[in-house]
Length: 200
Image (tube, rainbow, N blue to C red; front, side, top):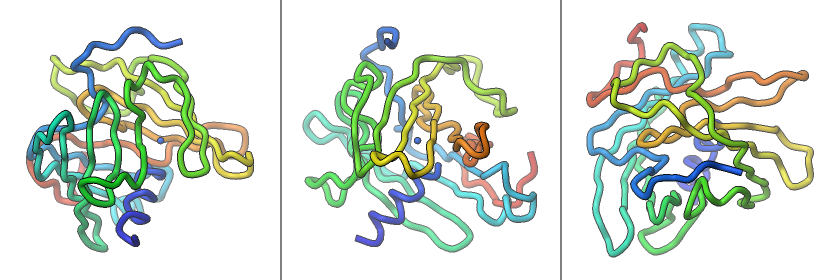
């Protein structure tokens, strides 16, 4: 249960639409793909200390689902988490048969609104990838989807996350003091483990 809560917290820190192609999945699924995230609102030293690496460790087809194991690594430790991809949806699994958290609903982003774990989610629409200096292959789609989320009671943090096909979350912002502040951002992408002290 603690593992589920830990990964759910990482995901939370970290989230009329055009027609989506059948193979357009807003999540990573290539074995060995490594994504590195940081909070650019923190001072440089703390930003490096709190970086998080996400690596695709295993991918298996089970029925109509793609079961993906992601390895989350920070300076405090490492943890594996199982995700199920099905019909454009992404779910964190408690075990291979039990869903713990719906990250993106089936048929995303055609499904424009949903509720999960005390928060409301709404697709705001498509947009070009935010300018963050992240280098991606020329063949990769840079048009993604913004998703806005807020607590059901309206008292918690308002967040919006940007998702790209094949990579998933690229950036998450929180509404603070009347403006959007980036609190989680993908800063590196590749197929090898990335040292946390690596400079851009």
